[in-house]
Length: 269
Image 1 (cartoon, rainbow, N blue to C red):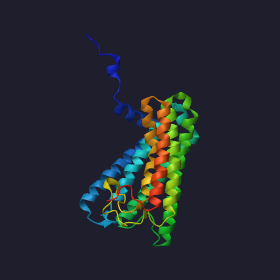
Image 2 (tube, one colour):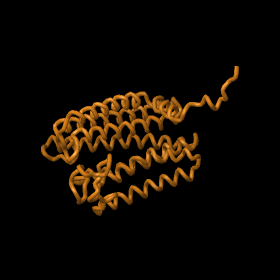
Image 3 (cartoon, rainbow, N blue to C red):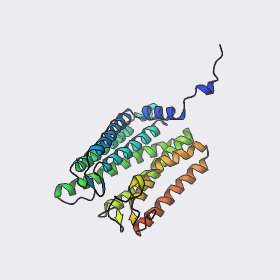
Image 4 (cartoon, helix red, strand yellow):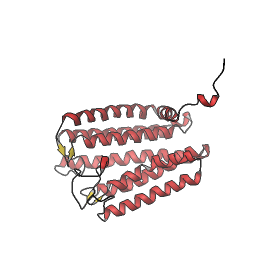
């Protein structure tokens, strides 16, 4: 009986990726599965609830936050899989994982609460409760990114394990720093729009970014997703490529931030 060459038995990249995400952190894995259910529920609600807020379905924003946090949880759990099992279970990393999870769910639940009432979750100063909740959301967002940053630093300290470990650490460090800085600026404003139409009704594609004025969400998005772009660059097997992509993420975040502050859309419509 002939046997298949060992290379043909290697797991497909997507299977290996899913396996790493599952093994990196049981807490994050179970949480992202629950978030996937939340995303599906939001999608179903969009089919039956015709109410709108800021020109889009009231469940559009919760759906996007569920998706964004699924990606965040998957990225961090995958990154943890680059560390030895014993190190993943250390008290520092365990606390970071639980802090991240608690902050993410608190934010999601509040966003869903406001969506059910067709009200703003962000930039809502309509009551003392709304102002306090918005402040707590900001604290939660910082907790989420600082927890991921801590894990990124731990990965960077273990960069001798290989290029992918190094890239995972660099991606989380850069992504969380850029995302936090851009997010802090956005939260200090009264809106993420800078000029143009104050509505998502005619925004750009899936993201609903403004096509008539500046939109601070663009830089925040690009900055955060350095966490995925930099490790992806490591598939090239080249350290210079990894750091070139890291620098590109920084430059693109700075460019789109400056563009938004000046009231210039990413693409004008």
